Length: 365
Image (cartoon, rainbow, N blue to C red):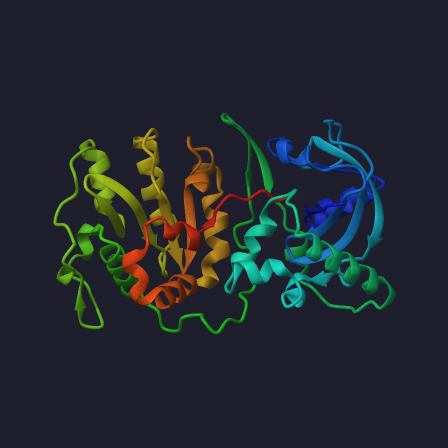
């Protein structure tokens, strides 16, 4: 038996129950992984808006294609026959963060908000021990329920679906945010200049040339002048057209290896998140065939806002989609990793930055 994540919003969970609770479904692009789910496996039901586990379903069939109407806003055509084994309601459902000391998932991912990346796409396979823990706590909660109030707005949040000339697109509610986790690594008083300096110095210490946005060259952090970095370049390679170069010149931090862009970072501190996203989307639109490693770096408490904005149709319908090629790094994770790496930095490859970044792709039910 295997255990799988099955995401619901409050709305799609209620629609699932209203239609008998006998069929669960996933988006068509999840077909390949869904084919690994077999009869007898368990689906752990998770409410995305309030971050709680709410039930367990036993799979009764292999996956099949069905576009009949169960959910109002989307089809979820990759279907499974299921049977409800255990079921809670929103008030007795168990907040996932109450289980952080019992689940391997949290120990593997570490501190900060990276844990939530696992809960943005389903189906996803749980570690067997985690699956057993989740089934056990849900079962016990039925016998010993604990009432926990919740934010009704978050519970009922849903992606609005619209017809457009590029097809059906979805726009998540822009004012939704989850509460940040208390974390001793959360930076206090961090500034935009500090993060720029850390990224510039990190790239330089990795043996790369670095670029800072054209209008930021005279900035300093703690008396460290950006211009003082020995590997800071005064101009970018002229391999693109003028419009592309003008866009690249305004990106907060760029790592270079020869003429190649190794990584590009936009620091979204307190300005509108759109500013950095628009620069990146312009770059992708003008150079769709170039392989770029893009990163949005932002305070921990802006993480959810970043994810909502980058998954708007403006960015998600690019080719390639911006959420697919742009990854997120929180301030606390960046500072923690730099501190822990210390003098070992000389032995690392630039690709290590990907290990501390998380995907911006969202695949909620």
